[in-house]
Image (cartoon, rainbow, N blue to C red):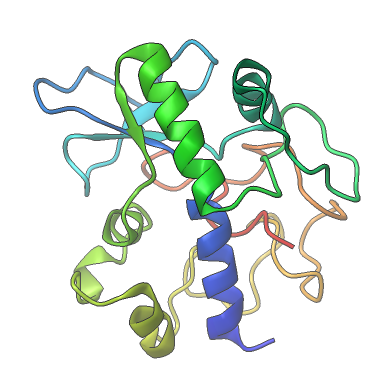
Amino acid sequence: MKLSKLLTTLLLGFLLVSVTVSYKKAVPTATKADPFINTLGMEFMLVKATPGVLWSRWETRVRDYAAFCIETQSVQGKPYFEQGDDHPVVNVDFHDAQAFCAWLSKKEGRAYRLPTDHEWSCAVGIGAQEDAAATPTAKSEGGIKGVYPWGTAWPPPKGSGKLHPDISNDSYAYTSPVGKFSPSTDGLYDLSGMVR
């Protein structure tokens, strides 16, 4: 698989399960050490490059999405592999993720949403190196040579995340529990991978 296609797959996988909270007024104090925790137990914090937006510390977990499915009587397809409650939810598409955000917004009275492509780039530290107006496809075709979610090393170092099946750098066959790999400097976990 070409690297650009691999990274696009990883990006799409993360965007489908990452949630941000937007605030039009004062943003609550939420740091790595003291995150904002919602009613599902999801932890949110500020990321320097995206002021006014709280980021989920990790992907939406199986348990978070299960609460949505129970309350809305939605059906989620089960994966062909075992997952625990702390694993990232899989088998959701863009519309499912949007519905989850709408449900959570109504439930909590806050504006939950998926991050924009440029917000995602800023959160992983490459926002200043790309054209904010470019489409995700245009960005993935050009890419930023030698820059990956885990740094500049290739191949990725052990423990850098759940990547492609041909890149064996962890002990998990499929998904791993969220937060198992090193966080970014802002405290976000699992920025490189979790998609197979």
